[in-house]
Amino acid sequence: MSDPISTPTPAAAGSYYQRHIFFCLNQRDQGQACCADHNAQAAFEHCKAQVKALGLAGPGQVRVNKAGCLDRCAGGPIAVVYPEAVWYSFVDQADIDEIVQSHLRDGVVVERLLTPAHVGR
Figure 1 (cartoon, rainbow, N blue to C red):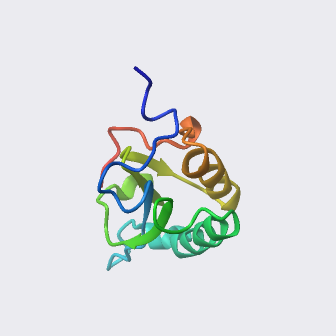
Figure 2: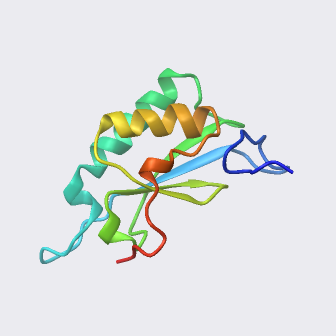
């Protein structure tokens, strides 16, 4: 049996997208830590552009979405890829490019960008 996190997977029966990536764009009040303070909007826009440029966008492929708080603020900025439920912390556009090319296109998790399991709010 192959590992579903490290190999490309076809869209599940009845699934509209093969992979769905959500970017936390939440802005917290009163100076609380949040993804919006770490250029999450720019990362979302860059990811969306890269997915489109590589021809990965659309039904049966990849969807890039905004999300409210994903409640993992301490690891921010945060994105999560489904159906694998892989959580990423990223720093810059190069990290987003690696997630797009490795995980969203090729189905290979970017281990160095994984959000540690214990990181929460």
